[in-house]
Image (cartoon, rainbow, N blue to C red; front, side, top):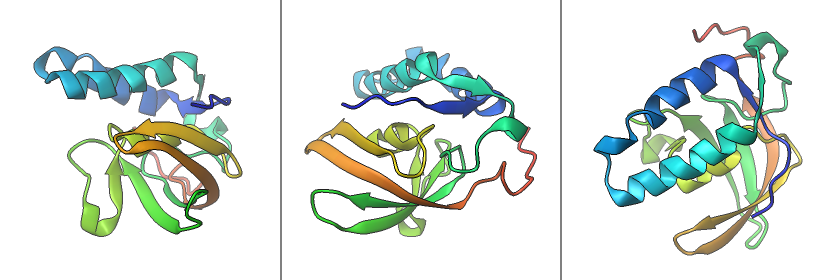
Length: 138
């Protein structure tokens, strides 16, 4: 798995740490997903929401990605657990792809292990980022 530089807002980090603190109530598979998220949070640059670059995937960002193995492009919104909706292409940050995308920038290529193998994704575009839009998500 490629590990580039990632950025997380303080607000998103606090909310995600709260989710991680409840790991004891989850099954083994969910705890493994939380561990991956925790690993990502521990290496991230933490910044104030107003300081996050506009080309970084934050929580509630809507992004266009390309699968480098198939060439297929998809649009997703990375959301908190409980807000995921496959029909609306809203993926949980706890899903392997959601964890993989959080904190990376437009142009970054990510390799991430998913149940079917290694997924190679390129972030093509941020269609909406709450912080760049002036949204206060505190």
